[in-house]
Image 1 (cartoon, rainbow, N blue to C red):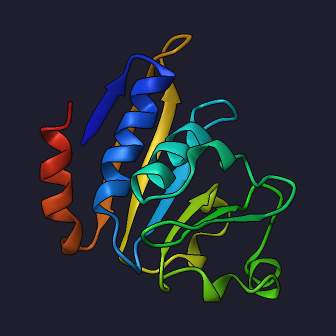
Image 2 (spheres, rainbow, N blue to C red; image 1 turned 180 degrees about the vertical axis):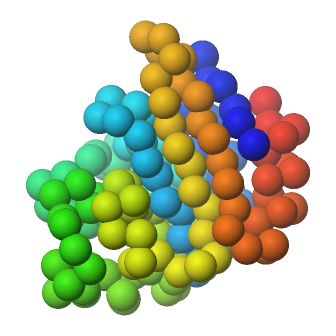
Length: 153
């Protein structure tokens, strides 16, 4: 299922929509080139989950940011990590599939980290402010959410 957003504000709004539905244990894997909008999307998701969106930044150099809200949002960035042992050494297991929503940028670098049931969002730059976001759910529990996303806007 694919959605095209026409501005950064729309990308945030789409994230906010998902964040409003977020449940503990959700794992969302984000992929896309640098500048594709992964952190922008996460800003909206965190806001939808009740966190202050002003504090949402890329965790590229810190690996993990935690945003407190209705449920916690664990924003992880695997860009600089190369294998599962590096990720496990950082204690990621306590965040993925736990009491909050784990949003994992560059999940494709260590796909074995994520559980079989997850939502994947692949972001691509279409034009200066336009983004194409392709969603895929792994596991049938995502079917209803994907149907809701079809009606988003």
